[in-house]
Image (tube, rainbow, N blue to C red; front, side, top):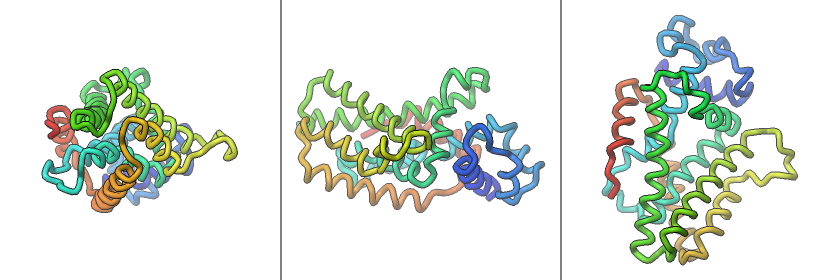
Amino acid sequence: MLIDNITRATMQVLNDEGLINFRVGRIISNANCSSKSFYQAYEDKSDLLLCLWVRTAVSNQLATIEQHQQQLNDLSCLLLPFVMTLYRSSEYPIAMHAISTSINASIWSSVDSGKSDKVRARINFFWRWVRHYAERLQQHGQLQCSEQQLHLLCDKLSYLLRGFIWVNGSQLVDAQHRLNKPQIFMDLMASELLPLGISQAQLEHAAIIASNYALHSQQRQRHISCQQCQQLTEMCKQRQLP
């Protein structure tokens, strides 16, 4: 309960105050906890940011998806991590931007290697998931592309997602210069997938399945203890995708 309250309070304070100006005192007040309880859970602001990213990472949900989820075909599985991220980014755009910006190897070089390892495991599992299902679509003839084109597709999707989070949360780009609605991101994804053999009907159907699953998954999010966090780190490293 304490960690849940601090997580929600931190996301809201980051969204209101940004990365540089956010105050631990306001988080403590909003979470209705004592300073002692806060600093028993987190060493400092840096530790809070890193743990916040780890606890809210989309990879936590991806790593626990059962392989027998029949409603998730390969195309909906490819879309799922992006749709999950869009939901999270739309709910807390500035906070997601702040957290994503702060999660960088050069910034966290002095952080305990065990903690940065949790971030690395989740980032790499996210993109391993994307690559895996893109390859399955290629192997089954749904994506008609060469190995080089497949690699380029995954790179493009990575750049699109990072760009969306940055523009959606920066608040520095004037509205007339940005297209930051989730539907725009999905349209851009479609512009990459449709020329490779995916039909508009297939894409729309898969997007509905992924959206329904992501929304349901988000509604049943639960507190992740430190022990469960470590278990999820190992799952992200070792999980064999079907």
